[in-house]
Amino acid sequence: MLPGVRIRRAPGFRTLAGYDDGRNPPVPAKLPTLLRLLPHLLRTPVVVCAEQTSLWLPAMVPLRTRFIDTFHGAGSMMARGHWRRRAGWRTLVAAERDRQALIAGGDAPERVVTTGYVKAAFRQRTPATRLFADTKPVILYTPHWQAHRSSWWTWGPAVVERIRADGRYNLIFAPHQRLVERAPELRAFVAGLAGAAGVHADLDSFAMVDGSYTAAADLYLGDTSSQVVEYMMRPRPCVFLNALGAAWRSDASYAMWEAGDVVESLDALIPAIDRAPIRHGDYEAFQRAFVQTALGDVSGLAPARAAAIVIEALRR
Image 1 (tube, helix red, strand yellow):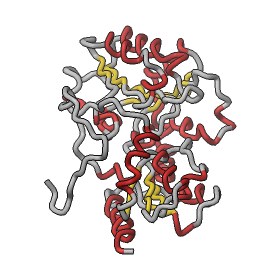
Image 2 (image 1 turned 45 degrees about the vertical axis):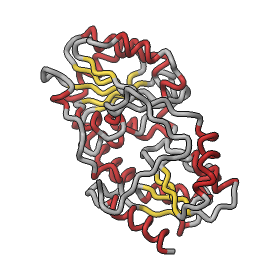
Image 3 (image 1 turned 90 degrees about the vertical axis):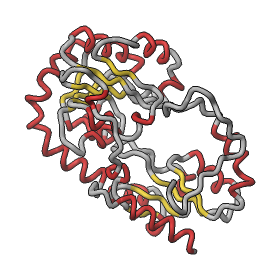
């Protein structure tokens, strides 16, 4: 236990058996959960949230509670302009680029604070040696959860099967946690991978969000997930999947695709993976510059800066 820290259970909290290993339990609908929390929040001076749904409360209800919104990811597809974001007392962002984007979208400059990337300070990660018994190169495949941005529905199962059939790589299949909400068939697919050599599939564990997999991988394979920015904190080969035929070169939302080769067909997948380490030198400078722009300071000081904002809110 940390001194001065108390964990309290929210109204409606239930203890579920079988989740002692850290997997995420089933989560109830967000809006009803927020409504149950409302009486408690009326007596709470400061709320820190890492998602936007909670901001419906200060946007719709005249609360004295100060909400501090902290971005939980980074990248060129970050949602920026929704009006409920402006209901928070402060918004914490990793990099100055995000701050300027929010200000351009209508946020007051004093509301948006640049802290650096908080997750860069996290060290309790699962090493690759605990995931695989051999030293084959590790590919991380992380399809996005939104259908209009994701490779999953068009190519996903085939991508996994082609890498398995090739046999020269280990594969971490760890999609965005919300993908299973939109694609419930995903659980059966992952169950079918149980015990397969060279495959580590995960839909629920804390390792999906603590940086374990982006740290363990030798090659990033994905579409538009912001995890690629976290992965590039240590520049390594990337391959991107244009499963939906996006005109990506003219779209700033796909800026991260300049960090590696872009695959336009499934038949090009394995050749692109094979040549990615050789081609990496062509992309390394871009990766370093992109991370600096997207994440700002990754020295490990960001948590202290974010905590200072929370303390300021309490003191006021």
